[in-house]
Length: 302
Length: 306
Image 1 (cartoon, rainbow over the protein chains, first blue to last red):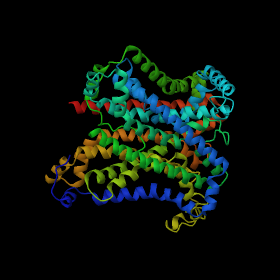
Image 2 (image 1 turned 30 degrees about the vertical axis):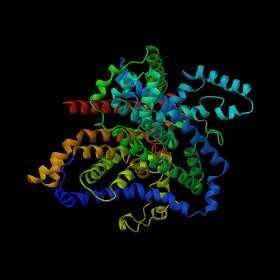
Image 3 (image 1 turned 120 degrees about the vertical axis):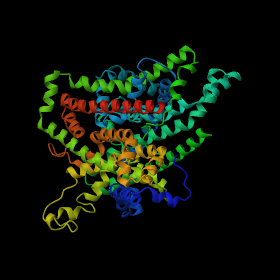
Image 4 (image 1 turned 60 degrees about the horizontal axis):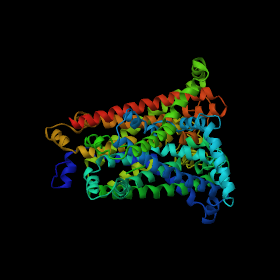
């Protein structure tokens, strides 16, 4: 930390370049990010409320919202669970290849989404390495479920196949969100006081009680942050999903794909209206994530 | 602070390693269960896709693999990807340094708002990142009519009469790439420079160094690993971006296709070997990125311990 100089104004004068760097930062930010983003809002502001709501509540749009938000949520949930276990294993256990696995966790950040999309399709499609035995299992399971509990449209909800259907979207969205929970949880786990667990054990708690009542509450802010990050990322994802989703309108069409479809039909108005809804959703999430991070920083410092 | 979890390199403390094995008190079957679940997860989502890319690319042998790169369209896609990254990465590098300098070294009102705004592109879907540039530069866009009519009121005489095409052309691809990779360098440098403080810079200035001298000889050596870290992540994303570029590119073969877009075209034509061959280059880039990233992290940690 810097020396606390008595007057902020003095500090400003010691180092040069404030005006230049701030001016450049604001100009670049304005031209590249803020101005183009505002174009979406200005364009939509030209619509009447009735037109806007007609655009964003069309059945195909609503269906895409359900698919995008629903499957992103499930994928983030799965990432919270399995990412949590993975973070635990990486921090607590030592095994050969641990560092390699640790480095691999960032793969979804580094691997282009289109490559991930076609690779996942190759593995999980009907004649892929995993798909050839997983798909019959899945199809059979969904079928049996439909027999046992017939009043729910299981095949519509869960999809009859893996690749080119809703489960494929789930796989792609889980892939892109994978690093978030692991990476937010790892430093917190590493900093966890051993005394906490020792105290719990001394007071007679068994391992299960220690895990669920001492460790898990302690990790909750980090898990929630990771969950929200993974959810936000999945919501906007496009590249990895389009190859594996099947892209059936009303059933397995994600919102970003619908935006592109509308653009290709020169329906700029419709595309922009949907984009504004998605932008607002992401800004709300961003705000939530900022609050979560502020909360967890205070939580872990205390 | 943002929608990415790429940890800043200075975060992990040396305690992390010491805490490790001493705490294992879980019964063996819990350990076995956790290990199995975690490693299956890693295998299914990370290892298999990576292996699949190379296996599929080499399915018909090395000849077919290299044949994919003899295609002039593939070569031009590679060139365009390199060109795009070579513009986008330095732009965001300069921006990142400037932003980190004013945010870490000075106090001013609205600083935390500015920091949040810098992270904004990470919150925006890639598709929407492309869309907003279409809204500005497209034919129906704000600037579209000026660009297409050959009248360029601001750019002076020499541009008159020429069409400037931004959308469905290289400038749009570059702009969209700059947008999606915007925060990488800045968000790496800001926390790093904040934690380093300004004492060394004060000392340099007091000893009579000029502002630029201070920056080149004091600040830059201090932040060089963080800078490198931000640049490799920025570069990986710039070369691999698909959604945003797909919206603004127009998919003109040999002209406006980057490598990821070329992969898509080949794949949709059922030319799987070529699609995976081009993908394998991108996968190698990803592996190289992870390797460099890990090396920088190790370096930062050992530097900290020393």
